[in-house]
Length: 525
Image: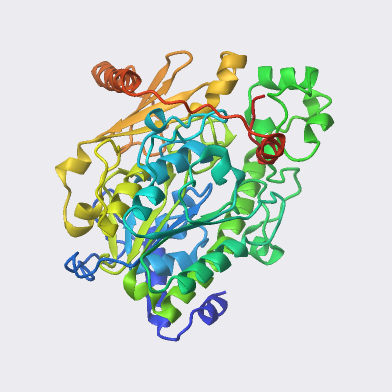
């Protein structure tokens, strides 16, 4: 396997980087005693190499890559026990890795709205399938265009089509590659078009947004990647969206769908799977072996996409574009593998769906840095605007991360702020079958994270420093902390609701509605 990996790394000088990475990977796997809570991490050498005067290193190319449904802790560079991402790990070695980046929502639509506006869902208003981005909300692409930047986007899901939810409305050049959930090959068209745009607009300032949907269920990749990860298995788990949702959703939901297949709540999944559900005996109940197999399928998909991403990385280096570019790699949300009783994503706000990768690399970006300060995907837009020399709107929720890149230590401005996440997608279920699917939201401040079920008012409190897997609820032990965080959430919500209101209701045509149903999401009528 090592020889095969080395053969992919050209030119030969990368062998040194590869061996350096292997050493780091062994450390992350537990080869020695490492305190990962410290910033920056000792697993990768920490130095300020690459830091230069910002005026002299302003990029002319900025690329934002969003890998849908990628949880950070399933990348080997974030400590995963499987070697899932060798090429991405190598790429990140010469950049800066944010160890604690958090999504604003556990599903694609509101999370990408936050990435592309710098606003949390309650403020940008894209909370369910019937809401679009208001015309009054500025987008990252629109702000860049108004200051002379070319903008281009290649996306891989119907959620991001401009005419639907308006998230990508200001991109001057746009490509939609329809996702086929059960396909096994990577979405190379996104890579191809990005390369084409970069070559075409070589003499201009250019912002490119690349979105890959490959990791979203159904989990399917080429057999050569599955062979790297799959262990012997004889069960029925197949990684399909329909199966994962059946194994996750509460019994009242399943009962309703058995009685009325045509209900708008039940028209989800792949093909006619709903019509095959004739009895509760067909509802999958996954054990440890099933869960392991599902994760192995997911990890195989990461390795396949990692190889595709390396094709883009290789282009940047071979063409010399990396010398004047800055690259951001992130995800909209993660994925649950029964850590808190569920598979899939969309509803809860536990860390398995909120902890996402965030990697910066390029001109002026420190090399070999790992930053442990908690940050959010809402920080991406203001950071890009800062790099491009574009004023950051005052109303934006995110902050420019450049000071963290330039500092060797913690900064109070960042460590003392609150981070928010909202699983507002559950609203449409909650209104229809109240109490069946909870609507979670959460707030992080310092080491504490409060999770709120908005339907019942129930709360959970976790100390993420001592309990990063959120296994020990401290809500009864720390009532004052709970009270303070709940009050902050309530005050914030009241302030937003008292602010400007916009018309953001949306009606999709039947074709777009069916595209989104095929992805496994409930689409109201």
